[in-house]
Length: 115
Length: 502
Image (cartoon, rainbow over all chains, first blue to last red; front, side, top):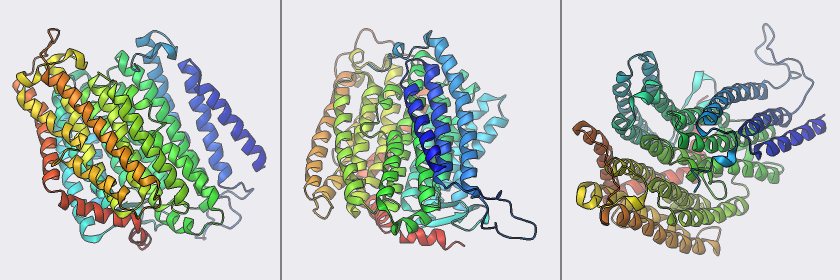
């Protein structure tokens, strides 16, 4: 199972890298989105895949049963998803404003600050 | 209140009070300056506590380490928080005269406070994923500060800034995930313990390289720095100044933390790579600077070059070298912010940032020339200013002969000295173009009222005075840096302070 997920993560990173190198801002933002998804999947895979029980502490117990799945990477991924969705909302608004001020979606037209 | 938590709460409280007073933007300025004053007091209190006890730690929510999140301050972190507070006050006062009411109305001071909170959190946290979260807080606030106003150069710079920093965050997160998978913990102290005897240290080096890319993008090392000169000169001057002073140094601090605590198993490779990158960073930064004629763009390239010195200190990994890095951090933040603030004042006086169109400021404003002279010569490394002692420490550490790189270190020392010469050349170029030569007829000064003059000049005077004081009493500051470096090299005190808190 890890092999399938590892290949998937690799493919997603490749897609993200390709999109990030595009000329259009919208495609670049899509690249960032795909990259964050790939990283979330990477955290899940790297932390170890188990087919364990849901990590809830049962009534009267003080610890998780040893067959439970690890809750920490799930917490990390949730945090990462929320952060990336907030950042994506900002990035889309920013690209809209950039389109309005520069007049185009083309990154090659935005070299004014580079020379 | 706990000294660590109070440092985080001061800018946060200022941001919240500003949010509550959303309808009265005029109040934001006073609230922020007051908040920065409280922040400085909290930072000094934290520094005194760390000075007395060595390392100070507190568990959030009383969850025992390593299961909960611990806030830890050793000397390096405490020094960084104090400098952050000083810069916060300076920029907050400068912003009163620099930032137009429209930007203030849309939340400039709120995001300034939130960004400072994010920076402080990144310095004080003892958990690597928590550091990611604080990085994101700092990052998104900086995105807003960079784009607030919506002018075309801002948006162009912002696209590059945002995309590259988001890529850096993605790499950081991936590296955190892999590190957790290998070690089973996220707490710095626990990571230090568990990585000491790892079965397959090569895989750990791979993770170290991912962290190097992630933090290197933020810090601005070669070849990952090209977003910096493309974006740092576009927002308003106060924003430029605080970015230049703080944000790259958070990346350097993260590199120091990670490469002195966790990835110390394969130092010939990891720190050797850092050594090579430091040399390349110094050279590429300063060569980029010598061809520039835009004041702020020139300074942006210099940020990159000086980051190279700090990474050199980290790469050499001896007590003097790390002390040089810590001292350099302290000196450079103050000097860089000061130079950017001065560029804002010269912009007010001549209407442009282009050095070719400026001139005659020495005749028109001799005090401004003196105030420029101090940080410029400090950056160039002229005694008795702070930059000389910082450069001296790093170069001496390379030549001391007890490093891991008997062949490489003296070469880097030579490169460092040559780069210092070119830095001095850039500073004298600015001096010649902006201050010394005859005034250009195309200059249009914006009016500066009396209160404007007070608000713009007093932060510059404060920071210049600090530079002179550090230069006149370097042994006091360098002793603290040596103790900080000793703590970094022997992390047992850090680990004890965190793990003992159960």
